[in-house]
Image (cartoon, helix red, strand yellow):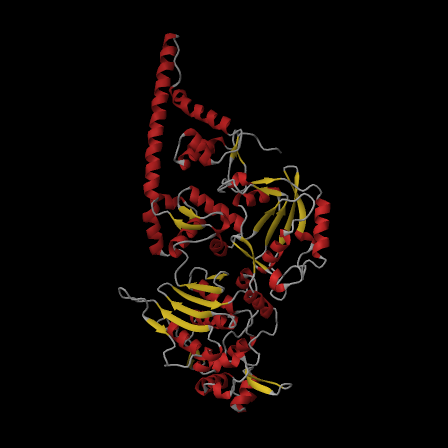
Length: 615
């Protein structure tokens, strides 16, 4: 991290990824709570040597660099403590802790990655229940016992779905579901030895039935009960979990849904049945390709495979030990999937593919044996590939910590839908055509989703949060977007009043420019009268430029201290910042005016200065 990057981070203020601490020599005790919370959540950066004035509303003035008095001592104390018994695990490397000189003062940077699921919970003071923290938008908070136990379960490589469910036997199995599964298995594995086994032995072989020899107990595993159990048996043992499918397409006035799968007694509510019913309903009406495989027709497509993978992933990654809903919705322009739990691996690695950590490996094996989720780590790439082939926008996967869910949206719309572009043209007029391709995509996404945040655009553009923050701030500055909230959890919506607000600005600027012209004419008339009296006459072009030269001098004088475009506009009493930039600012750049962030011209934090940069 560089000096400039630290300053830009401080402009956003503390967030889910940033914590600032004042520190001279001794490490603040609260650092260890933040270490735990960052490691257990999404990672983040601690800056030691930064003072925060909590009563200062202006984010540009709220944080000041105080510096540490002895960087070597501070860094040494940090390593001595973290390698002691303060925390249960040290997930940092040497390159994660270092000092950066900021305006002559030393700031110690502690860059904390998200801990691997096998290392969580990361806790302090030797007590996982009382010493485990999580990061929210508001700061560091204690994890409750349910959250800690969920992390402990996730740390188990073997998963939990293979555990014995006491007192649940073959009597609790829906044989119709099991036999339907066996038929699928036999078709796919025609000469497999499992086909000759009785039902109980078959279930044992695929991980659905087990025995505890020491206690002389046997019965269904969690996976076996969920996959093939009778609905009543599942609800008796796992009343914390529900399965829900809603179709919100083709709605009549006042209708909430056109179809819904509920516990109405018409089907046994196990995962096997839920999977097939939901996949069937999601793919109804989708285009079926005509492909011959040998002499047989194969009705399959990338979209069909993507839907199956999405439902499979939802099931095998859900946390069935907490309260929640396996929820699937079909809407006019998207498929929506939600499961209880959290992501075991970072979302960016999921998008990369070839990374998997199924929370329920027995269920994963059961689906794999009948051809679903066949290649480990290939599920999400299959979904991405289908969207690329259909030229749909990239699917959105998000973890919602407050709700303890993971949500996936597969959009059935292009990255730039024609109807959305038409609406944006109506909303922004010709100004929309002046935007670049990335800016148009951001506005189209915002229009489509109604509101977006920094994380959504990171996924869409595959850019880091700082660059996305610059882009969004620029669009807000130009009035294309309006923002709600502060910092990195700000939400953005399209500015539906763009034409109205810019028309007012244009009218005001026209008035001001007319005033400039009148003033220039008066000045010119006076000069002309004087020149005539002296037998001289000024050049007409020079007369017209007098006012502009005067304004440029005002800008140069004002920018001896760096100022934003908005601040310059306010100083000169202009409202149309775009006109100001084009007429006055841009012609001065590189000769009498310089950008404070030259490598990011459209940054929302951009300022202009008349002091030449040091070589």
